[in-house]
Image (cartoon, rainbow, N blue to C red; front, side):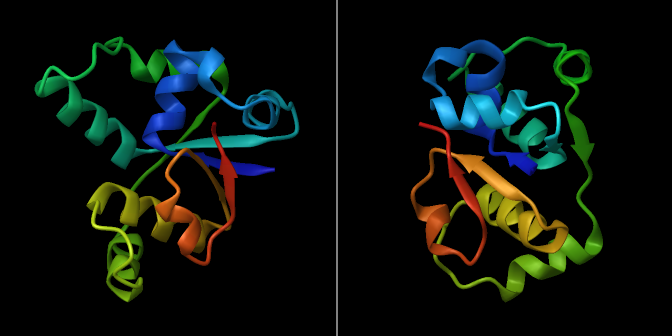
Length: 126
């Protein structure tokens, strides 16, 4: 399975693993799965931390390496694909994750119910 962790799923995976659904935790741990973390999620974590809404470890890249997660850069085609999405979600971070998942053939692991309304594969994180 090829997975893209939404920011909430990334947080839960790294610092609150008990919050993940059994199905999501199993899919993330599955040796056959390839798990991606978007640069968008790293950016969103920085925004959240700057607002002091979350204390997250400073070593995100090291933790990604430790878990075998692959980074997913934001490309110009990803950015342009956001404009073609229906205006379902108001969060620009989530809209970019949807565009990336669609273009890269990934299943988004998320607790966000609004993302399910897009034509993209979703694995509930809760």
